[in-house]
Image 1 (tube, rainbow, N blue to C red):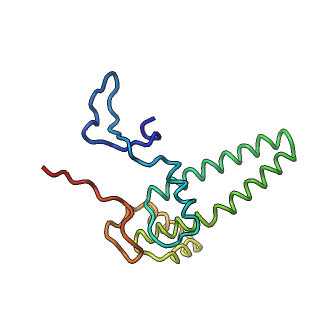
Image 2 (cartoon, rainbow, N blue to C red):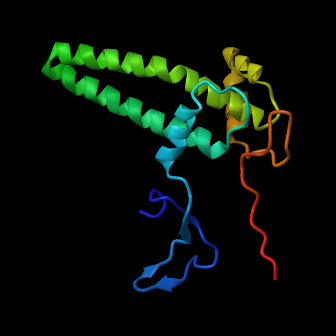
Image 3 (cartoon, one colour):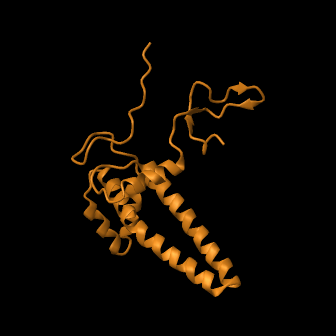
Length: 161
């Protein structure tokens, strides 16, 4: 419940026993995975700016889970009714087509996070070029502002005292 319930780590309570449970070190305020997914859809065709690693990977994860659910539904319905299977096939095609633009947009914004142009996505068309894009997708945000905007990742809080 903690990780998927919208909580983020709290170093002050991590590992402490609270009642019969050990605190997972989580606190209210973090975005839920579905909110990251919806953020990408809200910025549907926005190719400017920067996107965090978490935004990209949460979108990718939830989109993959949706596609797995679609394909499972098609497989089950193919045994039941040909018409239902065709209708679900059409739904899969429509979702896939609708998701192309947000997928490209979040990928371009992810490259912007490293100071690279969106044209770098074309490198994935050559053999092993997709690995270069995968490396950029896995790297943490560049903390400095760049030509594409300020760092989307909030700065760590400093404790004064």
